[in-house]
Every structure is written in structure tokens, then in C-alpha cells.
Image 1 (cartoon, rainbow, N blue to C red):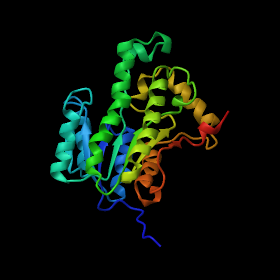
Image 2 (cartoon, helix red, strand yellow; image 1 turned 120 degrees about the horizontal axis):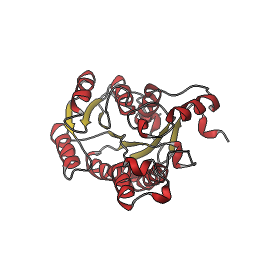
Image 3 (cartoon, rainbow, N blue to C red; image 1 turned 90 degrees about the horizontal axis):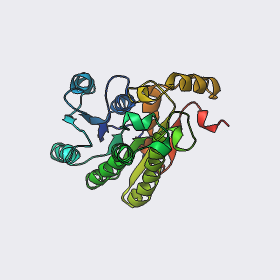
Image 4 (cartoon, one colour; image 1 turned 45 degrees about the vertical axis):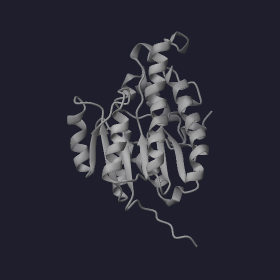
Length: 258
């Protein structure tokens, strides 16, 4: 019988998307670290740095680097630093999304071409770019994660343009899972239930959505960042060695309800 490891000791991972202590990416990073992984953590810009740096210190991050995926060359610089520090990578988490407020708050049919393109570039294509840069460093296989939402599959009021964007993100993950699978690289979309994060604060009537999910989900409770983190970290271990390409819901079962 093949020896399995249900921890991440000796593994090295990149976490993109921590904004503060309420971030999904922070919950994931905390779970990765709890299972023994070494981490590289990014922050968006100098304004965000004071909020993220204490968390990176708490996580014992080996690397703490700026990353604005809309700025040419910054993602390449992050992976160059990983190459120099570690020489390899075992997993990477993409937990970022953005749409211009005017487009996010308007109907999909009213979305501007510029706004749609920006939302797709930051929220979806940056995951593809991340995967391309991670691939040569995942010499022993690896795992790539991105964060989606139920609005990729069903119409969620006020989610608007992010629905099509997240649908594209999930489809991209499936295609990359097929392409990278022969190299032992798994690709996952994680679909958390609603919770209060900085990104979610831009969605109209978000409190109403959370109340509805809590009332209707089989578990009758909302998820937290640790729920999401533990599921994500488990998939990075050998427990997820033959799981790839699917969307994993961490939402108390809400997605099964009619």
C-alpha cells in the first residue's frame, strides 16, 4: 500500500489574496501552516502592507512580497523570488477578484467592455497566469486553488457581472486540470458560502444574502474562513491526490437546495 501523508510538512506554498484577518486567503494560509507548510505571502500595495505584514509574521512566511496582478511584471517577480528561495513549489492559492463598482452594481447587459475586461483579467486570467508560472516549479506535482462562488452556476441577485466572471474561472480551472494532470498538478475551484470579507462588502444587499443562506442551508449556519481553510488544506495533502478539476462547495450544503 502506498504511504500517504495527511499533512503538509516539507511542502511550500504561495498564498495570494490576504487583505486582512477576515480574508478567506488568511484562513487558508492558517490551515496550510497548521499542517506544516512553509509559505510565501503577497500583499496588494503599500496601503495594504500594514494590514497584511503582521499576519505574514504570524504565519512565519519565508517570503513577503508585493503583488498587484494588474501591474506588468509583478507576478513574474514573485515567482522569480520563489525560484531563488525554494527552487520549487508544491501548491498555490489564488484568492482575488475585482470588478469596477459601476459595473458590479449594474446589470450584466449594461456592463462596459472595459469593466468586463478588467474583471476578467484580475479575477480569472490572473489565475491562468499564476498556473503558467507555477507549472515549471511544481517538479513533483502540486495543487492550484482558486476561489469561486455559487453565482457562477445560478443567478444570485446583485452578484451581476461577477457571475459570468466566476463561471469563466471555474471553466478555466477544469481545462487547466486536464492540461496539467499528466504532470501531477491538480487544479481546484473552491466555492465558499457567503461570509463578510472586504471583497464581499462591494456587493449590494449582501447581509440579506447571508441571512437567506443561513436560513436555507441544510447546516443552518454560515461558513467561516477556517471552514474554508481546512477543506482547502486537506485537498493539498495526499487525501486529494486523485481529486482535480471539480468545484468544491464549502457552504453548509446551500448549493443543493432548490
